[in-house]
Length: 366
Ligand code: APR
Ligand code: ZN
Image 1 (spheres, protein in one colour):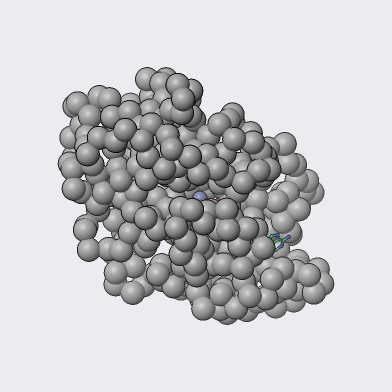
Image 2 (cartoon, helix red, strand yellow):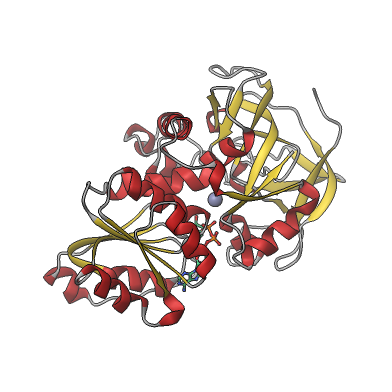
């Protein structure tokens, strides 16, 4: 079905609520796919943009954690057809650059900019004006047109809200453990920040049989969720120094500490929580211009490793189906992550709940 207009939530100003508007969506051009969104998650990455912590240009349709049903495909598109259920990847993959050749397509920049299609033009418009779309997706809308390689077809018996979370939180969190840090069975792990992504780091660590999983957050309700997803110990960072508490629990620090907030200070804590020969892994995405500091001598004396991981260092075509099989086999909890479901009209309430830390994950269901 080709649309004249559709409903979308538009960010017109930083620090302001999203506005529900009628916008126009062009049909897919060659190499693009139109997807009817079934569900899309309320992630802190979108919230960073709303708060103006990341400024990429306005007006923009946010939303990058999404799944839906393919409506139409542009010329020359293979491997996906109308009616397919699909999880949307929020990173492109040109297929020919050095990073794609390395199997690290998450780091591919693709042609053009990150907020339009690869040919440099926009598919969504309002009164003749182009609208930017976050990560070439912009799923806070009834439909999207995205580069074809970002549409990963999936088995059709999985609920859309579960599929949507595979598109960011699950892949980012579990991937940080299995693809980036490569946590070994029996290791000790600390996870700072137990939101939608952090809970997936926790369940990823449980999946690979970490022996201790220490969850750190400032909110007791988040620590309660953390227990449900596999944390063996919890630390409330507002009840005393988080680093000291983790060190005391683990006899001097953990093998792997994950920062899953996006905060320069908690990155420092992650480094300080690692034991000798440990690895600190940054998953959270800090506001633009943030800094952290560390003692360089300790990196030598302790052979500490500091690594970062984007999108779980995933290869979406391999990792999305794997995450879904693990979920359907009961080895990952995804439905259990969803504490609230909203309609698109309730999207601002969704971000308020995220901001107040009330939910594990909220999802907009169409
Ligand atoms: N110490 C401990 N926990 C904290 C602190 C702190 N100083 N500050 C915030 N938190 C906790 C919050 O209480 C919340 O539980 O961090 C968690 C963040 O979770 P969400 O808001 O649900 O964010 P999420 O969607 O999981 O994203 C986390 O990953 O992908 C990135 O851009 C994303 O930077 C963001 C991060
Ligand atoms: Zn996200």
